[in-house]
Length: 116
Image (cartoon, rainbow, N blue to C red):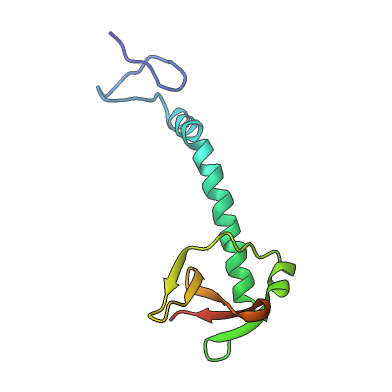
């Protein structure tokens, strides 16, 4: 029994464990197979990148600065997307996007910090 290409169905020649007739078919098969998850990942990464750029746009003196929630929202900052949380021994929770983070303060103020 002859094996067929997983993408186009053409008869395969050559190695016994061959699955695709060409690199084009191999790429097309994997692009089709992974397209849903790649869109989701791409959209999340774009939001994280935008949030990072917004935090990075603030000038940090001594590794930190303060701003308002409205200032962040005006730049389209999305508070739902961050890469990790850091909780101090005192119980304060910082939200980080890679090495830049923010801490919610009173009266809609936020402290922006940079982890070294």
